[in-house]
Amino acid sequence: MQLPSNLLENAVNEFSRLPGIGKKTALRMVLHLLKQEPETVQQFSEAISKMRKEVRFCQRCYNIADTEVCSICANPLRKQDMICVVENIRDVIAIETTQQYSGLYHVLGGVISPLDGVGPDQLTIDPLVQRVQKEQTGEIIFALNPTIQGDTTIYYIQKKLPQHAVKVTTISRGIAFGGELEYADEMTLARSLANRLPVESYVANK
Amino acid sequence: MQLPSNLLENAVNEFSRLPGIGKKTALRMVLHLLKQEPETVQQFSEAISKMRKEVRFCQRCYNIADTEVCSICANPLRKQDMICVVENIRDVIAIETTQQYSGLYHVLGGVISPLDGVGPDQLTIDPLVQRVQKEQTGEIIFALNPTIQGDTTIYYIQKKLPQHAVKVTTISRGIAFGGELEYADEMTLARSLANRLPVESYVANK
Image 1 (cartoon, each protein chain N blue to C red):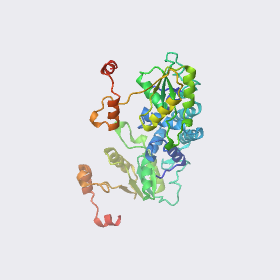
Image 2 (tube, rainbow over the protein chains, first blue to last red):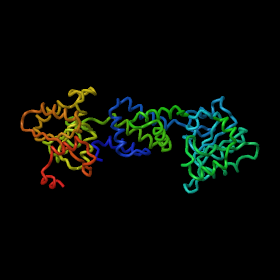
Image 3 (cartoon, rainbow over the protein chains, first blue to last red):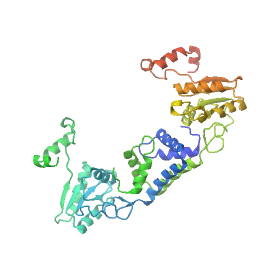
Image 4 (tube, rainbow over the protein chains, first blue to last red):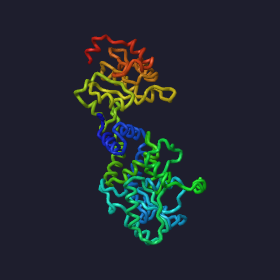
């Protein structure tokens, strides 16, 4: 693609580094910005640079925060003795969007995956173990993706947790709501048979 | 979607104003930027704001330029008496990418479309007419989209052009290369029959 301006080309190159954006889409975005008022574009540019410079990670749960402690940890209405362990910030957002969980979080920053060079030391596992001891946590809920790596991580953390009365659970795996048995993979179907629920509890949750 | 940080939310909102970007894609982009080095993000942000502030429009052809006159107009190897009239900058880029055209351009900034509130005064038609007189242009090639609005614009401009020996042509319309007759719409097929080419010229261009 031959661009008539170096300034334009720079901007297109920068946009095309974003995930899922090719040169043509990048050009479309840049030409869109070119049509906007200079103040609008300035605002766009500043929002990005400010976000990168000023966003911090919560010192307690490693979630994204504007201050030292994130808004979830700072909320006294949240159950302080329940921690939901997730892989990344996207998962926190997904669970928060359900509006069904009222405890705290702990963001691991990934899962143990030797093939990708991710060991326990790269994750926030030690801070989690210390936190559980310090905060006298009553329940830990693992909400990790149902992969070998996710299961390995759960197993590893569970072994490291203090042997006091902390309850460790994981979100249930099974056929997705609205899904069809016919199209479910064997692993999921087999697991959801093995982890079958009493009908009373299932009906009560509806 | 509940976001844990206002800074993050601002950035996501700004991204989701871009064409074709929803909230989820915007969040993916913002989290990607959050993982990059602060300098990389600063560079991204500056490229955009600089582009909007400093990009100019060529005083001769209204193409995008870094200087007063764009690189195409400033190139002495370009045929100075041939103007290709296009709707927007994207069309200039598309034609330049073919590397088959060696004349100059004129960017109209749109086509006449009363329904969208675009009249001849919003476009660079008057500068084009003056330019043709001043530069003693030999040929004008219209490369507008084959729509009613495009055709109206061609007709309007042609009437305004000085009645001297300027040759006015339009890019040919017809079945796209590699396209199939069976799937072509009636208008295209009818037009390409009406504007049939002598086989010699077709073979010569191959």
